[in-house]
Image (cartoon, rainbow, N blue to C red; front, side, top):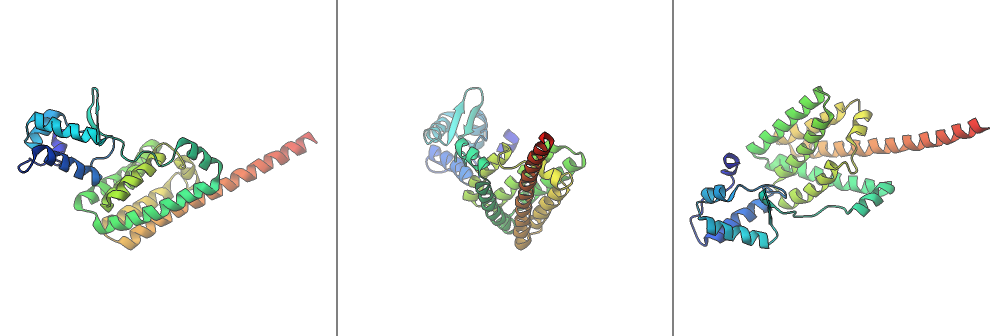
Length: 261
């Protein structure tokens, strides 16, 4: 934890000590570096990293806790608190599941936001952002070659999150984190179904790599177009799937009727 955290925090050498600690942590939250659930280092580690006394650090942490920005969990220490809630309530998720039109509205929203995120990422991604994207793309290829669906899904979500992060737009980062939480929980996005549609995920892999490579290559137009093409494919696949389910249901009823006659 200390090795990674030493790049996050800077020694405090000016103004009010507690205010300066709070400001640094708030800035990291706004930028999306620290996201909900992120675990902060121990008090001892943070005091050393900030170069402040433990009492002053506790004062800063207490202020962040009072602002509902961090939670102190027994046995875990301090973590970033839930920041944006869930994109949709369970009741609305169920409602969307029963009404396909609403589901396609959701995909329409994702298409616009992810295209925007990819464009910004291609314009703004740093060397570190590109290294993360390159590593995730390698993970995707390895998961595909190993036919590891769980690893493929983790890499899939990881790539989308990394693209949003590379946009360096704090609102986009936090809003899309809520959307991707739905994906992570399997809401609105059945990756196994999509893999079956496109020959075990070959096309999904190609689409994801196209987005990532365009961002790493610094091509905003290609990145936005690739993200749009990916969501177009997802939408079309689900439309085809729904039509297939309807045809099978009708055929089953017809078969039952002819069998009973």
